[in-house]
Amino acid sequence: MAKKDKHKKKKKLPLVYQPIGFALSWAGGALAGLAFRKAWKAIRHEDDAPDALDPDRGWGEILLAAAVQGAIFAVVRSAVDRTGAKAIARSTGVWPTTDKGGRD
Image (cartoon, rainbow, N blue to C red; front, side, top):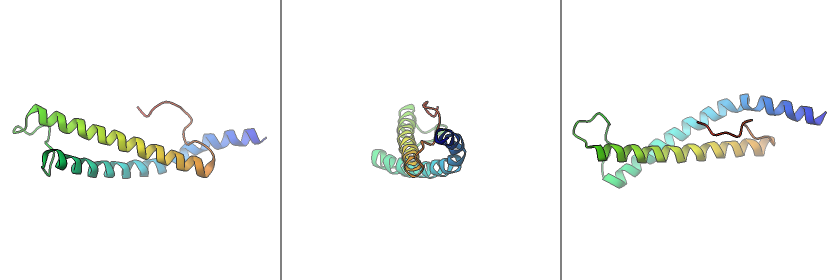
């Protein structure tokens, strides 16, 4: 009987985790945006990163900004997702997702 109860818990937990995951993702996005702005200021000594449609910016600047931003967002997203999942697993004893695949 205990095995059946554990199986039910695994099916319900992803639904419970969804709002928590959403909140963590939102906070992670805000943190990643702040980290990118600080990184860009350190790299280029500018307050604002170039916009892809800015005619006064070259390809190098645009692609550098995109690469730095993408790397920072990926690292922060992974760190936030992993931290949230481990916290849920510690508190419930069940990993919050049923699949072992990646997000994308």
